[in-house]
Image (cartoon, rainbow, N blue to C red; front, side, top):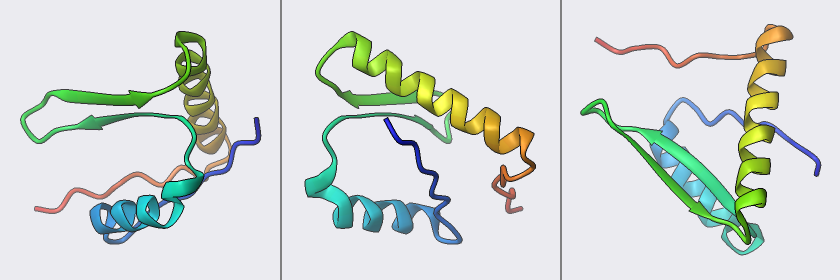
Length: 80
């Protein structure tokens, strides 16, 4: 599985919605976790199997670790 990275900014929420709309028919499986403002998390998934879900989680972990190691991870700035 080829892993690519796309950082959506500066309007991350509308950027994410636009990206999903543009890629909607190409998305085969997904797993995503959102951090909510109330401190909870919500995980949404649609995969063919438990193993596919775990594989996607592993890909996420590897990609984020590589970005950090390469100095390419760009954290969101907190607005005050």
